[in-house]
Amino acid sequence: MTSIRHPQTGQTDEVVTTPTTGAAGIADPGPLGLAAFAGTTFFLSVVNTNMLGATVESVVLGLALFYGGIAQLLAGMWEFAKGNTFGAAAFSSYGAFWLSFWYLLNHLPTVVRANDLFHGVGVYLLMWTIFTAGMTVVATRVSGAVLAVFATLTLTFAALTIGWLDNHSSGWIHLGGWLGLVTALVAWYAALAGVMNATAKRVVFPTFPR
Image 1 (cartoon, rainbow, N blue to C red):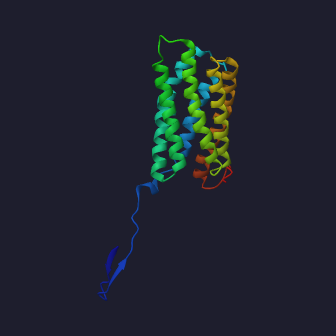
Image 2: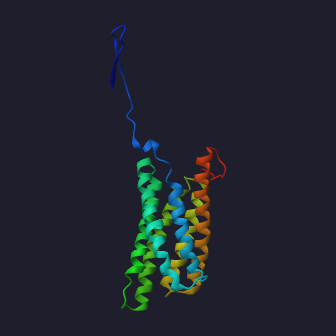
Image 3: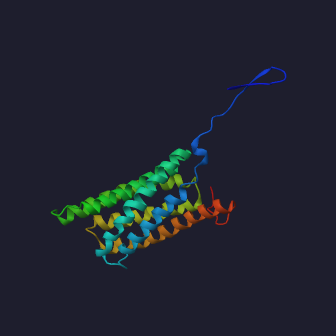
């Protein structure tokens, strides 16, 4: 509350003021998070479809660390500042997913039974399948574009989970790769829509809000 004194009458009025927050000037971090996820998912999915050999998988490490990991984690932190619980939980979690994926590729045990390794990665992917399925339910209250991202991502994780639990079944892994490509394209569309609509200050690319 602020006191304002009128210089002519000498009367003092009490005015209630609302404190401003730094979050008010923060741009929407959603497109950054979606683009970071899309780009990293696209590259890894190309490898999973076998369009590129598995030997180039190490190339994704830079993307997983800096773009899919750090950039998406930052997007999640900015979503916290904006008060968007869904975006904060999603981007922070998938940023952590890519960081953990980066760590996983850098620290795979050199001496381990193949089946143990396959099943360990399978359970790791199963955890993300369950989490993504839950976020898909919440996404039904966000927008059609975001719902499409999470629905296709759930199918991607499910196919990859089955593939790794089935002793790295190439058929399921390849299916997960193709589903991942679809997921990446949908996420890129949602990111493009966010950037274009904010820049044009009107709906150019619809996201089908719920």
